[in-house]
Image 1 (tube, helix red, strand yellow):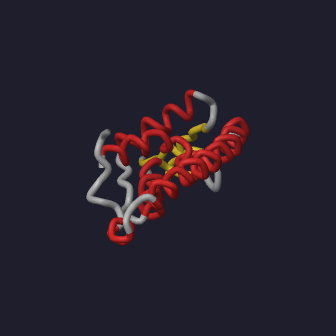
Image 2 (cartoon, rainbow, N blue to C red; image 1 turned 60 degrees about the vertical axis):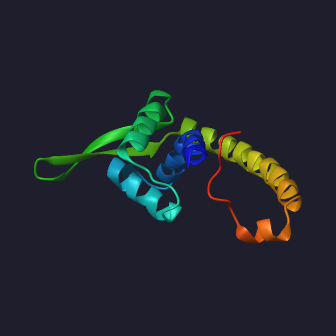
Image 3 (cartoon, rainbow, N blue to C red; image 1 turned 30 degrees about the horizontal axis):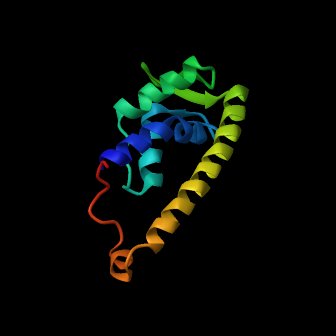
Length: 129
């Protein structure tokens, strides 16, 4: 699980940016949508999503606007900027390339496993080398 969390740190900005590229969303809404789309495979909490939103805003990739939703209550909505759209397009292309290359390595590695090992799926969890 440790590797999975490290990998998540590397892509959280990209997946958050992807969500707010479709429509403006507030933080809790982003967390719930990420969890829904991840199907329980990944956990996204306040300590992951809100720092990502701040990083994206500081870099000019998203802007935030405070909106009143009920009397006295408001939410900060985040939406992508043009700079953010360009960043997303470029990094989505880079991610696809990385995914393809890593997939080739994993496929080669899997072909060296015995049929029993391949059938068993992931062996417990990834462990540091």
